[in-house]
Length: 168
Image 1 (cartoon, rainbow, N blue to C red):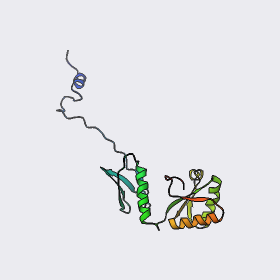
Image 2: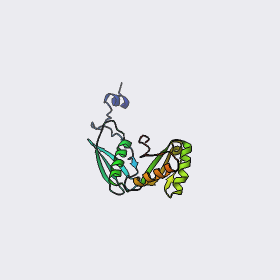
Image 3: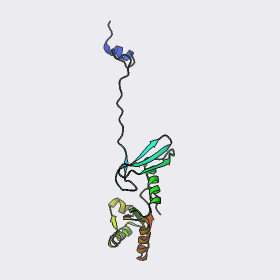
Image 4: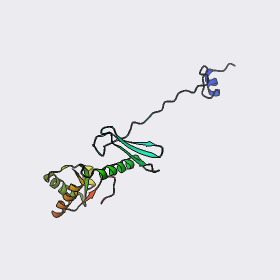
């Protein structure tokens, strides 16, 4: 009984007749790069790249390049937070998103309009409100002064660097 092409394929370990031993090409899907907001220019063009024992941060917008050592078990957002801290340390007068942590949701509702009246750019959203956060775009020095003004008005507010760090 003659063998069918299917039988020869199974016995030939994945090689069909006429391929001369070359394996069938595999399609490999590469995930798109994970982009973050650049800690210096605020464009959504900052990538965290891994190479051997180094981790590099690169912004296609302003050409910012940063490096750090790879630590096993850290996720990409943790490296991004490290790069953000590096930039904040070298540019303390840069306008950035600073989060104010309040003691309750009702306190956050009271803080938001006061911050707006004082002339700061800010944003209030339901998830931030329920986390008792008010986002303010300002420099770190001005944020400390703002917190003092809010405390003078009887509001309990603390500084929180970003959403990933523990409350202050």
